[in-house]
Length: 118
Image (spheres, rainbow, N blue to C red):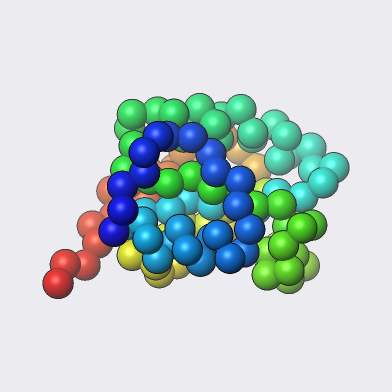
C-alpha cells in the first residue's frame, strides 16, 4: 500500500476511487452534488481534516456525483453529502452526514480501525 505524499483533498472519478482504495491503506471519500448547501457547509472542515496531522494516514477524496456514473447511481439512493470510509480496499462505513461532528466521528473510527495483517 502506498503512502500519500501530501495531505489534501483529491478530486477524482469513479475509476480513481477504485485505484485509490486499492493502492492506499485508508481512504475517506466525500460524494457531493451540485447545489447542495450541506456539501458547501462541510467543505471547509473536510479540507481542514485532510490537512490535520491526526489524519495523515488517510487519503481524502471528493467525487462529484453528477459527473461520475457509479457515484450518481449511489446518490440516487442517498442524499449528498455522502461519506464512505475504506480500509484495505474494503468498505467499512458509509452514511449521509450533515454535521462536522458526524464527519469527525467517522474519520476517527477509520483512523482507529486496525487493518488485517497477512
